[in-house]
Image (tube, rainbow, N blue to C red; front, top):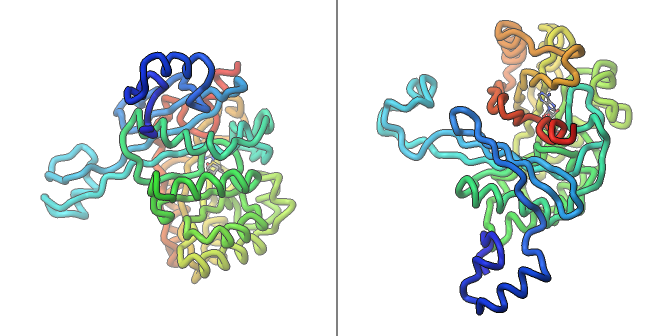
Length: 333
Ligand code: SAH
């Protein structure tokens, strides 16, 4: 069977009668596409998917770069500064996939946790998100577990899915798969046992336990120090730099002081930071705001003074609600 067959009807190597009987009695796919919404520039698409038991999940397709740089691409100024015309820019197609229906972690700024967790996704439901994104939007080069859910709260199924994604049939390199966790220390330790050098991203969001506990309720179980120790151990084992995600919330955790303390914390560690200016969640409008560009720049500069590599995640797909459980919520309403 072609693994991207849309249904039994596509299996033209089977007799027509058998195809009809199969379609009547069995389902080929664990997930059904409810909608696929592209962003205005077409680089990002958000998929809303329905599970066999009628729940909704989200996956996002993100295209970046292009195959060949001809010196005049709209993808822009930055590339132009780094590369001579004619140089090749690797095209990246990232599948951002979900590990749970909803989320139990209740991070204060995140839409996925507003209604709690419904259930864990099965490994097949996780893998199929990639198969669907691939069929609709082309070959996938990278996978990030940054959709709905906390991967470490569904470790067995996530591990099974990763094993399949990196197996012979799909053939992704473990180096192109990233698991993002709110900081579940036992999960980070178990990731070592998986024996595949997947990337680890840790959602830190604060340089100390007190501020972190306000934003991330699950922080009460694991201190910043314990998370960093587990992440350092993983980095050493997997021989990989850990990415620390930090959502910037205006006036809450985005001061120069916090930037400096984060720098002190991560200095000399196998770490890089991905700053994510807050994506407004309609239901949380009154609670948090996205900081101004200049505040983001000051925070970044504070970190860089400590030699910590820092990138700012550009908001892609805002208008398709391609952030963090928002589309599902809108559909549930
Ligand atoms: N449970 C995993 C995956 C979550 S989604 C984790 O916590 O890492 C990936 C990232 O998006 C996390 O860092 C999460 O904190 C962040 N995020 C959630 N809601 C957001 C919002 N409204 N704006 C910006 N980033 C958000």
